[in-house]
Length: 435
Image 1 (tube, rainbow, N blue to C red):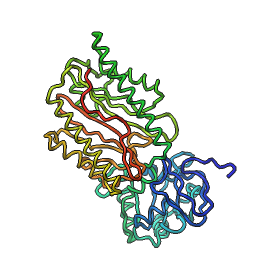
Image 2: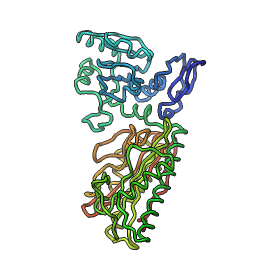
Image 3: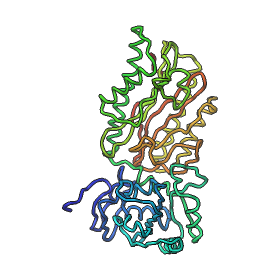
C-alpha cells in the first residue's frame, strides 16, 4: 500500500471477500462482499465490484457511462474525469458489465482518457468505427442502465441525448434509467458525512435562533430592520459558526415570503413591519471534503397574535410535513420499498384536504449531498414523477409551503434514512415564532 492515498472511493483491493469500498459521499447502500482479485487505480472514485453487485441485484446486464464534451457530469464524476487535466472533446464510452471486465471506447486523438480505469480498450476514429466499436463493447448485453429518464421525468438524471439512446437501442439493447444506481454511488452518506450534516444542522439552528432574537430585540428597541439587515447579520454568523454555502440565506417578509425563491438584494428589499410573516431559509455545510449540507426553513410573526388564516396555512404545511415524515419512518421500520413520489403524495394530500393545495406550488423535498440539491431521490410527484427509491444512507429535505400574493409560509426539516430507521436530524417547528 505504500504510496497510495486511501480516501473514500480510492485504493487497491487485491484480496477476496472484501466489503465494498465507500463511494465519494459515503459507503454503498448495502454491505457487499466480492470474490476474486480486484485491483483498481487510485484515481477512480467508483468501485467496479460494488457496481456489478448492484447491477445483479437490479437485474441489469451493465451500466454504460457516456459523455461528449461535458454533457454528462454524472459520468465524468464517476469516472474521475471531472478533475481536469485531460481534454475530452470526443465521445467516450465506459461499460461496466454485471460480470466480467469493463470495456472502453475512446477516440484515436484522445486514446488515453480512460487509461486510469480498469478494462479493455477499443479505439475508434471514423463514424463507421464508432458504430462497430459500440457494437463490440456492448456485445452480449441486453438490458443496460444509462443516464436517461423516460419522458425526462427526472432532469437531474436525463443527461444522455436521445440520439445516443437510439443508437444503443438499434443494437437490440433495452435502455433503462440509472437513477437508482447513481444514488447508490453518488448520494449515500458515510457515518462521517452524516456527522458533518448533523454538525451543520446544529449550527444552522443556532443561526436561526439568533436571527429571530435579532429581529425581536430590534423591534423592542424601536429599530426598523430590513430583510437585508437580517440577511447580512446571518451571513456574519455563518462565518462565526464555520459554515460555507453556495448562497446567502433567504429572508422574506410578508408578501416576499409568498415567493418561494425570493432573495433580498441591496437594490430590492423591504422593511420588516408589524404584524407580518418573516420567513428564514438557510443552508450550509462544513468547509471540509465530503461534508454534507443541512437546509432548514422557519417562519416567525411580528406580533403577539397570528391571524387565523396564517395559522391555518402553517398548520396545513406542518401537518403535511408530519405525514411525510411518518410515512418515511414507517416504511424504513418495516423494510418496505418507498419511492419519492409517494412521499410527496402523502404530504400533498394533507395540504389539499386543508384547502391549500393550489398554493403548494413546488415538490415536497429534495436530495441533500455535498451540494445542497443532491443527486439522490427527490420527494416529488408534482414537478416530476420521481420513481427512485429512498435507499439507506441517503438524506433529503421535507419542505412543504403555502404561498399567496399576500404572504407565504414554509416549514423545512431534514431526514436521513438508515438500514431500518429514518430520523429527522433537527427540531420540527410546531407554530409561528412570535417576534
